[in-house]
Image (cartoon, rainbow, N blue to C red; front, side, top):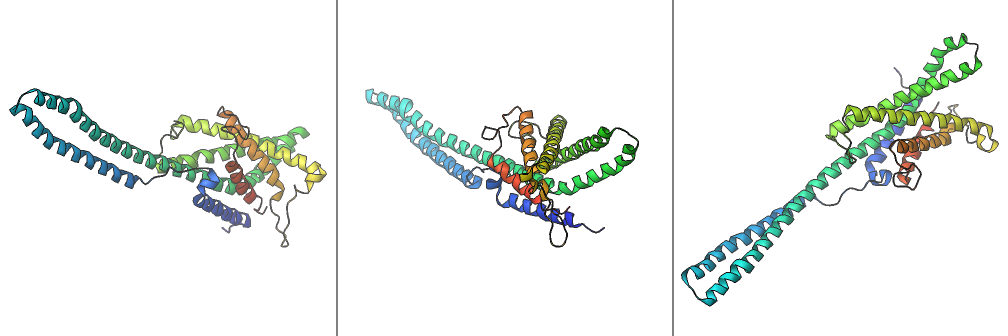
Length: 315
């Protein structure tokens, strides 16, 4: 089956977004990996253990010689020496040895933390990268979905005399179907990546492979996408009626007759912002930009990449 132009452009956009996510995760996602080489840190821990072993070995040798002093001799000076050795010098040497071993254990623990956290961050980057790719490619699917719904409802609409039903039914059916389809992808793709990456719990303590978590995630994305669709359609209708915005809400036609999907760029960015704010609100977070969990500049970078690319997909 031949691949259409829209699919080809979408595939190219998905590849570009994937490359951006791989090459610039810190700038695009605002993620900072923990610094430090776990192998070198563990090597330093081994050196610290070796130092502690050497301290212990030399102390055992010295302790044998010191013990011989008060076992073979007596007198006030010997008693003072014994007291100094057993109560002050010996414990001090032991403390130095223990500090080296505690530091070595802390180094190994930190090396483990670096590996585990950075691995989790890499998996998170993959999830966000794939999410951008999925959202770009979804543009083609959502068009086909809408066309199928309109065709299937054409017969039903012929039998209703209610103009309101004829106008609203396809729209609401599309919103619901589109939201369910998109939310399904938003659940399946991260779940698959988490399974491949061996991630069972995210940094918030959620069991990301559990049924309860993924059902809840589906509902959150479903409601957020319903908001996205309503804001998108409302923004497009508003822009079409405002003279100053009407030009922006127009598809660009290329010399070869191909029309780009540019009319929806601003409405989709607006809808996408509403989507993110709805997700934040469902998590109990303040959705406003600038707050702890609100929209960040990295979020907007992703939105411009995703919806800027979607606007270039031919209709």
